[in-house]
Length: 213
Image 1 (cartoon, helix red, strand yellow):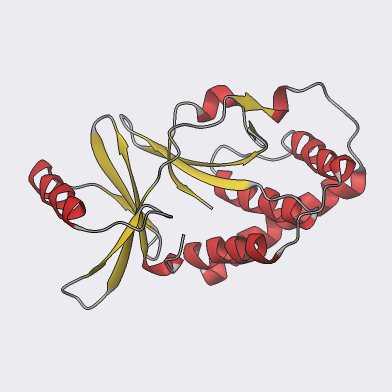
Image 2: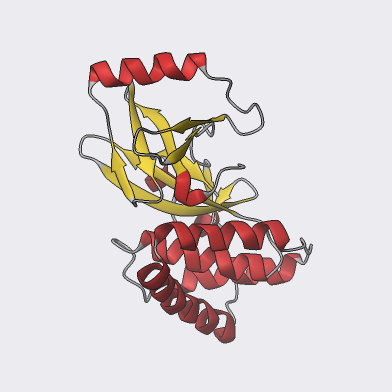
């Protein structure tokens, strides 16, 4: 992905309709059937970046916008939460809970786009360290912290905290934002090595990915 995140509008197809996520404005939106048809016709005339499935548009307002179509077809089919429970170290759990506080502050002060950009920069600059015991302890800390956190309306904060914990431990997980319609609902979760880290597979399976960081 080469676009600046605050100039990015991600989109995906759900139930035969397009749904858009304006990262800079932190809002989801859809188009009327006529407007959607015009958008698709315009998309076909563009030359999308083959590496990122994106194309740029200069809006009448003067804003440059990069449209990115999410090409991940579905969420992972497995979840680390369904693995056999292991030992969780208290310090790992305490660090993860502290990261929740920091993620909440970052979102409040810097905003949605800045929080995602922070994750993207860390992933680009963080060398991968193949330290499986440390990484699996981080995953185990996620399992134990879920027992003391109310995650029903805080999935984004939780996922940002988990991303920073795992990147710090040497992994390169994916932050996935997904949506579903009827009724509309947005969700966020973390995937690593083909498994959902901080949610159950049957929960995220109901959502279509719209953006992966």
